[in-house]
Length: 495
Image (tube, rainbow, N blue to C red; front, side):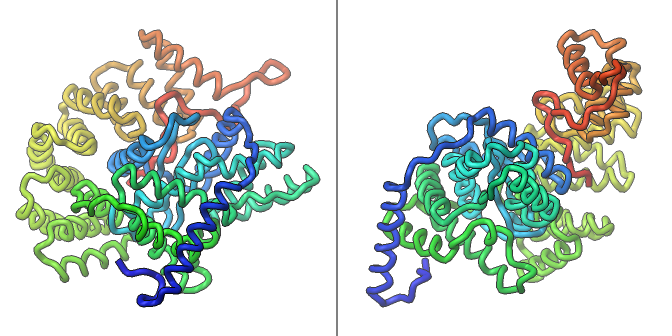
């Protein structure tokens, strides 16, 4: 790989060696810093999530969520037991950003995901953010500001890490909170934080079988965006300082540490990256991107697949189907191609064709969750509600965050006369979307007839959180309430 130092100069290697030595000494001699407790960090993370959900769509697409979780879990296996349960999310936002909140919530923006080109790059960015959590960089800074409420601190952290939507509100909370506590706050990452996160992140990347080169390439991609103009400087560069120093250190580390062998192209990454690039970036830009890809390489099935997704998203189902068939001509058994072929048939009212395609991909045993979802929806439209119930049941059991599946499960259960269960699932759907009025309506009716003690207890818990006692004994809606266990998807992006 090409070094960021000029080749042929001994000085470049000497400077790089001095940098890596300096960074190592910085970490050895860095003074120990106390952090807030794990319980306090969890509380802050819950408040932070409320801020995120007010301003962003968290993509709860099973393909996206499962893939990010797979990379995250692979990296976490290289670490000792952690005090938090880590969660990995993609925000639907075009800016180049990634960040970690207290208590192990890792975020990466769809714009950055689409710009990266390999799993090593994606893993490099995620691994760096995991390292920030392991080192508890934000929680150490918050320890010095404990007099400020968790709500205000959450807004302050959001203002720094999110950097775009919601930053004004969060910055105001930061200022007012600082004044109220009689102290100033400094919650952004320092250069020392970045050095420590890079050191730990690179070590864990290597243990997990990823190449450090991926992190370097990811940082180059982020840095390249700043040359478009000051208004387009990636928020990552504003929250993660010292990128040139970091790149010099990483480049030298790569040349001095043994690296895992290059990874072959992973079909799972191809699917994930194509799906994100076609479905979660600007529709016009997505269509142009894949039109160019097809023109450049007309034999590439993934180019045709991405073009089909973008065309259908822009209302051109006819051409989308044509390009899906070209993709299938190259990979006739690819379950994701078949799933989207069935999905487009369903969306255009061609139910018999949708049924045949989706039944085939489900029978193959390699069905993506959306194949079962659209098979259920097709069966529902064709009056085969009992079959639809069975398929939606499977999807919801495997993917509790797939709230659209829960909604249509409720609809199907209602059609077959299982009303308490129907009200239960539709109630949870509205609860996930923070529609407390409709959630309460359906959950109260579910409580009247549902025969599962576990579900009855769950419903009572939710209803208690929706309404709380006033001083006069009357009930009022609470301002916020957490989701039920295992059901954490109020920001599901409906397409």
